Length: 170
Image: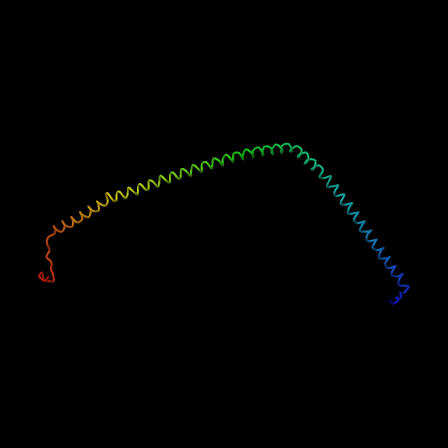
């Protein structure tokens, strides 16, 4: 290695600059500490003020809770009993609704069968009326129309027809 030569005046100068830096740093830290202590004191004063202001409220809230505690327990017990009763009623109601639904479905099936049977009977009756009454009536109507046409033809006086051809042509 090469020998390093240091100027003897520089070493005490560096030491002095470092010492001044350490002293400045200590002063800054001391100022921060003093400021934080003062801020802590102010915060504690505010906390004490808030504690004093809140003390009556907290005392009345604690009294209210102590007085309302048994009432709240009673209400909770009553709600539990009512809830159990309502559950029982819901089970009973569900069973009744299911029974009514079954009965209604059964009655609907019976009504459907009855209506189908009535409609089938009406259709059979209609066919019977058409086959037994309407067909002979149509036939009678046809006979009457034919008879009327024959009578109308017989009642008319004979008309002379002018033909462009001679009867002996055929």
